[in-house]
Image 1: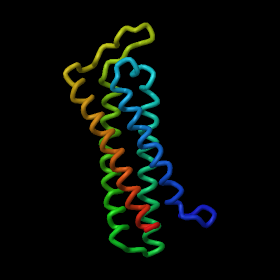
Image 2: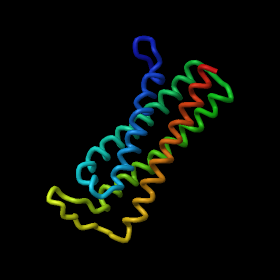
Image 3: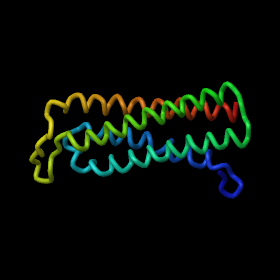
Image 4: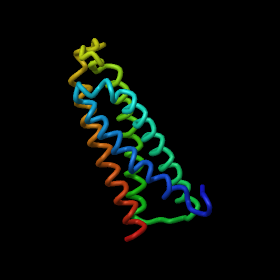
Length: 152
C-alpha cells in the first residue's frame, strides 16, 4: 500500500502514535467523576479512532514487510510489539466502553446519574487506569523499535 510512492505504514503510524496516548489521557481524565459527563463521547470516539489507526498501522506494516522483504531482529521486535499493542488496544477499547456504560457521571445540574452497577465502579476504574498506562507504554516501545529499525 502506497500513497504517491510513499509506503502507507510510515504515514499511518503517526495517527496511532497521536491518537492512542490521546485516548489514554482522556481515559485518565474520565476517572475524575466531574469530567465524565463532558468526556463520555470524546473518550469513546478517540478510543475507537485509536483502535482503528493501530489496526491500519499493523496491516500496513505487514504489507510493507512483505513487499520490501526486510528482515532483522529489530523489525521482528517492532512487529511483535505492534501485535501486542493491537491486542491490548482491543482490551482497552472494551474497558472504555464498559466505563462509559457503567461509571456514574454528573449531569449539568451536578446530580450524579445512577450507576448501572455500583459494585463494578472500582474495578472498571482501575482497569481504565492500567489500560491507559499499558497502551501508552506499548506505543512508545513499539515506536522506539520501529524507529531503531529504520534509523539505527
